[in-house]
Amino acid sequence: MALFDLAPKESEDALFGRDREVAELVRLVEARRWVVVLGPRMVGKTSLVKAVRNRLHRPGAYVNLWGVRSVQGLVEGLISGLNESVSLRTRLARAARRVDGFSAGPSGLAVTSSRPPLKSAWDLLDLLGSEKRDCLVVLDEVQELSSNAGALLKLLGNVFNTRPNIGFVFTGSLAGLSRTLLEPATTSPLYGRAPISLSLDPFDRATSAQFLARGAREQGVKLSGDEIAAALDGPLDGTPGWLTLFGNHVAVRRLPPSRALAETVREGKKAAEAELVHFLESRDVNLYWPALKAIATGAGWGTVREYMGRASGESVNDGKVLRVIRGLEANYLVRQTEGRYVLVDPMVRAFVLEAGSIPKVRRARPTVRRAQSVSL
Ligand SMILES: Nc1ncnc2c1ncn2[C@@H]1O[C@H](COP(=O)(O)OP(=O)(O)OP(=O)(O)O)[C@@H](O)[C@H]1O
Ligand SMILES: [Mg+2]
Image: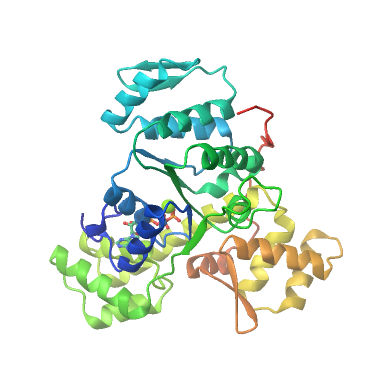
C-alpha cells in the first residue's frame, strides 16, 4: 500500500514511523490488557489498530462506531465485523444454532430484531469467547457510545469476568466514554481493571519531512527540500492524515505543491467544520462556539468568559468556563501550553478564525437509552 494512499493503512509494512507504538500495542494485547488508543483526528489511530490486528491475526471484529449512538448500532457493527472472516463466521454460525434469537445463513450470523440489543451484544461476545484461542475486538471511535456508557460498561465488565480470552482495543478522544473507561469509578464494573491508554502524537518536523520525501520517491515525483519545508510551515503540522492528503494531491493528482497545499488546507478546514458541528450537536453551542472563537484568537481566560457571556446572554462564572474548557480539552480540541489555551489542530484553528457565524448545528435527537435493565 502506497504511503500516500488515503485509506487507513492495514498492515505494519504500510505504516510509517510507528514501530514503537505498534510494538507497545502488541505487547499490551498479548499481555491481555485492554487498551484505549487516544489521539487527535487524522493522527493515524485507525491505521495503528488495523495494522496491529493484522499482525496478531486473531479471531474477532473491527467495529467503526462513528455516528453509532445506540447499543443496537453496536450489535450491527459486531455482527458485520464477526461475519467478515469466512472461517470465523462458519464456526460462530454453527455454535449460534444453540442460542435463541440467532439465525445463521451462508453470509453468517444474524439476530432477530425483537431481542434486547444489550442481550444480543452479550451473546455475540460470548459466542466469540467460546473460540479456543485469544480473540481481539476493536471498537474504533468508542466515545460515540457515551450516552450508553452504563450499558456498555456492564457488558464489558461481564466479558472481563467470564471471557478472559477476549481482548479489547478502543480508540477515541478522551471524552465521555473513553474517560469513563480509563478512570472508572469505584462502582464501575471496570474498576480495578481499566484499560491502559496509549497516546498517538503527530510526527515531529524531521519525521514529517522524511514521510513526504519517501512518499514522493515511491510515486516517482519530485518534491524539493524547499517545497517540503513550505508545506510543513503551514497547518499540516505533522498530522499524518494531512501529510498523506497533500502527498496524494502532488503525486496522484499531479498538482503543483503550492496548489496541493492550498487544496489540502481547504479540505482540512471542511473536515474541521464537520468535526466541530458533530461535537457541538450534543452541547450548548452558545457556550462552546464563543469559547473556541476566543481561544483561536489567542485570548486569555477573561476574554473567553466575556465572549461566552455575550453570546449566551447570561452571566458566565469561572466554573462554567472551566467546564467548557475541560470539555474542549477532553476532545483534543484545546490544550494548555505555556500557561495559555490553544487549539490543538491548526485546521480547526484556521476554520474557526475564518468562520463568520456559528456553524449550523443540527441538534442530536435525545436517543439516550441509559443502562438498560437486562440481566446478562
Ligand atoms: N503512520 C502512518 N503511516 C502512513 N500513513 C498514515 C499513518 N498514519 C496515518 N496515515 C494516513 O493518514 C490518514 C488518516 O489515518 P487514520 O484514518 O488511520 O487516522 P485516524 O486518527 O483514525 O483519523 P480519524 O480521526 O479521522 O479517525 C490515512 O490516509 C492514513 O493512510
Ligand atoms: Mg479513525
